[in-house]
Image (cartoon, rainbow, N blue to C red; front, side):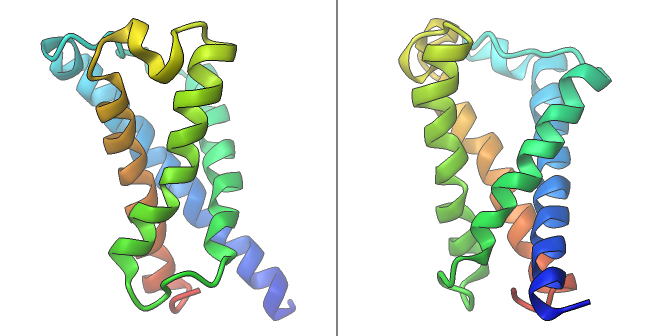
Length: 137
């Protein structure tokens, strides 16, 4: 396997793992009523139909980690790269696909905060896994 093929595989797998943890956090926050306690209507049902696309998209977003950005600053890198999926969720998915308003404000005024937190979980998990398994890709 070539070095580039290995890197592609690693960032995809890392993004998938990050998406799994992100998705579990979203579900747990909803299930425990944490999001609703803050007036945010994000409480998905944990199902394969909900989970699988999120994991695949997390893997695709993992390709951001191929960018030569702050490789020595693992936490900063994870947080900065998590802004990509956060901005797409807030300004494309919520308003155009889910019809929940710009930044998902129809879900509650703190929806953008929770989206940032959940995507930060994705970015940090992906960055940490790559550092641990991928030797800092």
